[in-house]
Image (cartoon, rainbow, N blue to C red; front, side, top):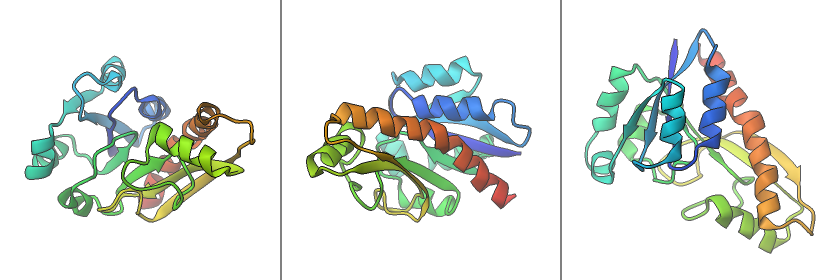
Length: 190
């Protein structure tokens, strides 16, 4: 059995899709939801689906390796970042090398790095006048949005599209592909 921990900071629409995708999977299970915000709506989603939640504070995350002890308790062997905004510390990247992925709402290497998340990305795409955007699923390393790319999907952007319309198109791609790409990665590692 592959046990997944999902890290999320906000509403967690991607986390919800991933949880739903693996609910009846006999070999892959979302076992833990980790958030850095005690009031994040994604924690309610996890609770409603019978998934344990863990809220981590900045000190514990960066100054201790407490999360690794928590992961041992749940037999976590794969980590998914689904809207988690903190940079992952080196000890965690090393412990889960090749077993931690993130999703980015643009076609990396464009529009990546510190501060490039959510609306900031879509505004930058709009400001640049790009004719396409999309998603990038990539392995996590010690830098923001810098790990090896696993998968990309594109969508056309019209010159009349607002940043909000771009966001909707990109979110549709995230929901369509993220869980299935995670599943393919895990199946290939079995």
